[in-house]
Amino acid sequence: MLAATLGAALALQLALGQQADWDPRDDGPGTIDVSDYPEAQQKEYALFKVKCAKCHPVSRPINSQYDATNWKRYMKRMIRRPNSGINEQQAVALYDFLKYYSSRTAPKGGGEQP
Image (cartoon, rainbow, N blue to C red; front, side, top):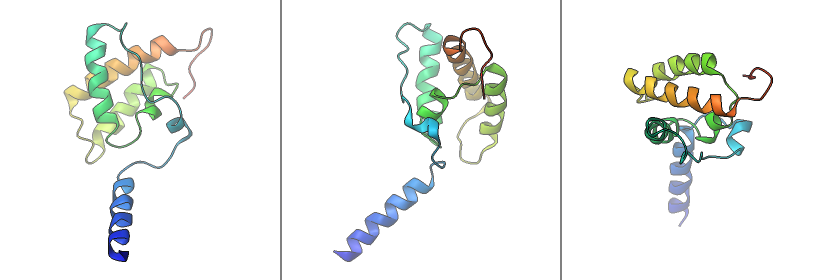
């Protein structure tokens, strides 16, 4: 019994170790209703959910208030991360989705805050 408990604890620790550290944005909504988005962004959202969840909760980018410039910088950083599994073509699609999403959620009357 003890061996099974220790094995389960080790497996959990290894699984959690592959995720990024907790961030306050992780506690926000983890999905986006893209039903009224253009078809291209709906497809990019599907890619976004898979690729971004590989390293951190999808809620993190969803709840980030970045503008297109910041998203471009972050995508360059993410593509260089070992094991991200994001190639150049996917990075372009992810950036396109995040740029579109941030344009829809930008605060009115002011700039976005990174």
